[in-house]
Length: 279
Image 1: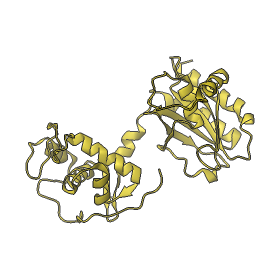
Image 2 (image 1 turned 120 degrees about the vertical axis):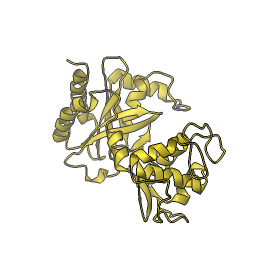
Image 3 (image 1 turned 90 degrees about the vertical axis):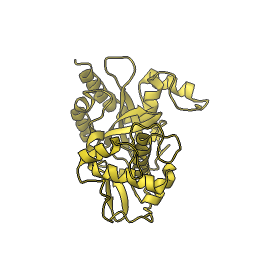
Image 4 (image 1 turned 45 degrees about the vertical axis):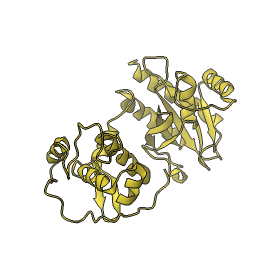
């Protein structure tokens, strides 16, 4: 999540494109599907051109994840992080550029607008964003704090949406799409109510007692446990099932009492859950 310094590789990506790469997305897809040759990559082949046994799609998604982690980075760094030869990484990145998944400038590669559009269409429940929008806005107005809708994915807390508050200028690092460890308040309230087989690794000895308290009260707290100057209270959001599908959180500074926010956050959480259940 920390900003990464861009490192530009030795290949000049501003040189003229090879004849096999055109300026249309359809041509890029056709190129991926052609039989492998000296300058082509075969999608159907189980092994990547580097001989490492990785598929082309694995290599492409690995590069996308490396770009996401870095924010912006050059060819040498991205190839090294993914364990790919620079020629292979270059071909895949250029195909991703044509498809709009990645953008290229003189400083390196960064995430493209197509990935932004596709990513914002995802949600764990079809109506989650629309159900949470107005209650989250009301909660932000009432508390003056930043309000988040969060989900648990791959054992981590993913911020799905933020609603800005009137007094949250110091919380700029908190933004949509950021992934945090599961032990934020927003993650703990989900883990406490989730199925036991989650990819979390070893849990602290105190977790059994803490999770029971979270389930009993229906709320979790984070008092600068992860981000200095940020305190959080979170409640679960329920759909038709009994396992929470998301959480609602309020993030504020240490000067505010989290206990005084609990009632307002729980009320907003109940309103969202009622909408998700169609009531």
